[in-house]
Image (tube, rainbow, N blue to C red; front, side, top):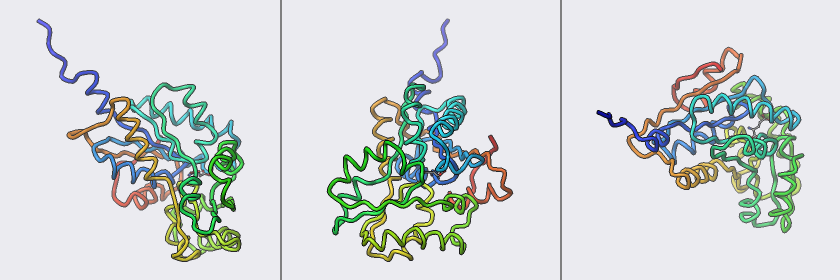
Length: 273
Ligand code: DGL
């Protein structure tokens, strides 16, 4: 007599987790939007902090790290991948989509929404060197930046401050002041947070640029795009899926666990990878 499988293949796929990763802890800002929009999904987050920042690495180096992390997440059985990093998306998303067959969601600085939101036609973009130098960013400006003035600013050192968990330290404040100054001098009324680490210092940035300057990031848009893709491929979890969130990090810092829990906002299972 044949016994019926407990779970159909389709149900088993729906219950699989979603893999989310970044060069470090920045992508947790995106993870929060994903969990808010898709609370039933099991989420696995990898912080590749030992190799952060990606922003100063070559596209080949970044691609190699993205493959290593994606291989790890795929070995954990994920049904989709979110590259919660603008720099990694610019350097590696095409190569990743060519190599893997599962849905892969990437992200880019919010130039389009900023160009739509600006009132005076001047937008600022804070991002990493890697993002600003990429062909993808040039294409983004070509498509959406034509009718506005775009002032770009690479923020060297800021990712490292956030990786160390120094969200309000004097060094962090000084860097933010230094990097926002050129944008303010040009009169930007809208600023794109073009790196997933920066939403964690949003309050400091607001203090420097003032309440009237609109800050835009893409965390919510990425979560919506992920939901759309999961519906398209019939993989969206619905209750009673686990909704569990697990973290992995390769950081060697003593306070790595504390930094992750502080940014996530509550205790979480964290393992070394
Ligand atoms: N969080 C990343 C981004 O969105 C990159 C930070 C880095 O490693 O340089 O671009």
